[in-house]
Length: 554
Image (cartoon, rainbow, N blue to C red; front, side, top):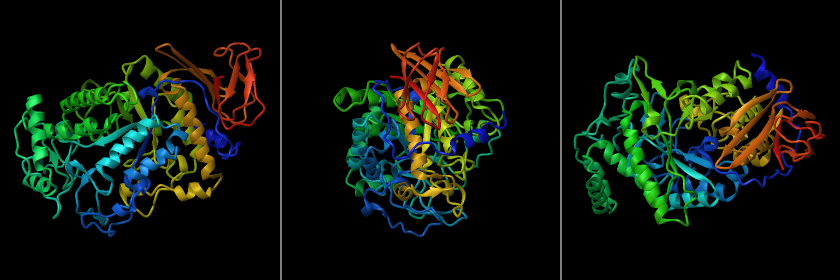
């Protein structure tokens, strides 16, 4: 139905409830499931500045192009927002943080002015955190605080490439290739190549032993940790029997963050640009590391779940199922290599010309009956490197929130989606997607055309809390109840936990037929407003206006 997005925009754009009204709560003790996770993705440097004293290091200056400098956000700032309850109020139960390892010290000129590694994807040293982001102690506090608040931490990891080569940042001699550039015509020209000029590609296919780069040894010695690092490497290679090839060094260094802090999972970058087998090898070490950490830290662990990995295969769609096919004819099942989930790139396009039920019903079949059964996808509508986000001009904000948070599968909120953070048209390329988090607008309740920031934030909070309380939303089965008003149910039975909800995706509906889901005389609450009603003759009748009805048993 091609008019659906416009229809939903009209239904959602005018608020019915004050953003200051108290949020309803649920007494239901819902289990956490990655299939229903609400993952908040943030760039540490752009989110919240908890320590202004670490804003500039290594001679970096504030001389980059628009939004291409380090700007001050850090790990401490994230921890503070957890303590403030910001993520719990939003229903978030996992935070995905960009890579925090030490970045190249210099800058590159990409034709748009100087660019620094503020985003975290230009690694200089996998064994250290970048001081702009914070210290190891800061990271330990972040994970501990998150766990105390029922939140899991996903670290972003990069094994495909190092950072660019600059005067301050020499090449990893013997570890990388510097040409050819990828042409994406087939598997070979997607994997054994560099993504762009001056982004050295790690020889992850190699089993040949290599020496540690002299610049890394010199760095460790200067920092007083050379002997410790070398001893740990000796122990790792002796235990595993792996050759001292580049990928195994990286696996050791990356999984050290699990061993040390109990990190819950990885979001893995550039999955399709690396041989599939490397991810299974990474996962085996990550799985062992988290199990060991939980055994050694029983009082600090959040749960008994195993390590979790979600992969970024650029342009992967839920419709690809288990096998991603490269241009050409090579198909690879990355789910066989330790991945529980893949980022789903197709949802944002489906909003343009499909009725929601067409999407929801199809996703339900694929996730509950198709080849993705017992697997999952992570849906999103905007991100740090998608130049065509859904609702880029922030005019369809309520529809954006509703569609993402109610879609089957896990949901990824990109920082500022929930506050309609404006993208910066003056920046070039990906930088325009990476503006500072708009805390000031949330605090002042800035007004936009047709809504206020607190109003949209409150909408996200209600959807997020409802989703968190009801795993059936993302992990359950979908059943349409009626077309007008558009009403559906989600149901889940998991380890004796039974969960049923009904959602009405229209505004100010006062009567709902629920006889197929709820029992006669059963007390039901509209979570969005807190109003309750009893089922009479198979129907619920409400008095309060409501942007959307989120129905749960009391």
